[in-house]
Image (tube, rainbow, N blue to C red; front, side, top):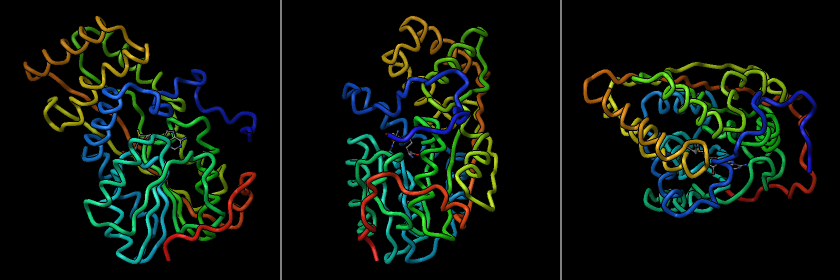
Length: 305
Ligand SMILES: C[S@@+](CC[C@H](N)C(=O)[O-])C[C@H]1O[C@@H](n2cnc3c(N)ncnc32)[C@H](O)[C@@H]1O
């Protein structure tokens, strides 16, 4: 197993829970909850804008071969297809089996024969160096053991001159609550859900460390004045609570009191919430080649064109 260089630890709070890196172990109902949360997130306006603008920054063309790592249930599919056209090729990988199955079903529903999904770990991608014109991830880096190792793998499988992109959010909510301990407590739980909580504001640093050049980052703000502004807010703040209780980050009575507080503020029109999102894009140049293949990397990828 490769180890990260000293000083690479992004998470000042320790290793984190890896909750979203171990979803295969969840009971079925909670796995379904996490799938519905991803579906709700996929259309939240600021996250959608961030994903689309990051994808535009990848320089994709009709016929491009692109990799998405941590693809979940295929949220990016509809945005990638128009960019790569029928002759392009999208490969999505994810560590969660049921999400891969859902993404495969979404591709079939759209008749997207140029999209394929498989189970794989972003830190050990089963593709040879230079297999793709571009590679990206969306809300993945906060969950992996080492964000630098994950981006290093995206760089490795991208051809020289190709682009690598990431969307990352800071799961710290600026949130109205009647009791300050509710705002503090939910943010502690959210922080525990991530391994690299501060990957977002560190994207430029991580991308440069991976040897990427022409690195550009952008910041986006997601905000709401009602739980009903978008399905994301209820899915994230209320429906997700059993997942955080199951993980041991919250007790059930605390979660109930938090939900009651948020819903009461929403009823009286005082609910307010916001979080920030970061994107980064960079180019694989000669210096990126220093990232090197992982031991046992397979022969060149044969899929697509
Ligand atoms: C917050 S979700 C984002 C999913 C998707 N990109 C989206 O925007 O809907 C994080 C995803 O990363 C996956 N994941 C976590 N660790 C992984 C790893 N080491 N390799 C591949 N996927 C991983 C999880 O299974 C989950 O689908």
